Length: 56
Image (tube, rainbow, N blue to C red; front, side, top):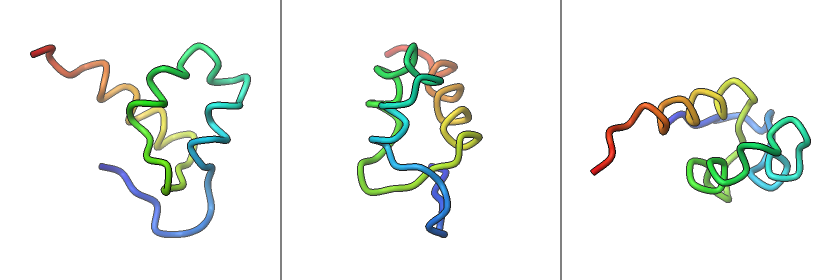
């Protein structure tokens, strides 16, 4: 899991309310944690990793 140790970045709620990620809200709900902050690059990497996972 990619975690940001510093306070810079955006919360899960901010990503969910972002127009830039409107088409990825379901994915963001799944890959982001409520109590963490993420940069856009980190969020994009988490989304990509989730989409590349093999279905069980």
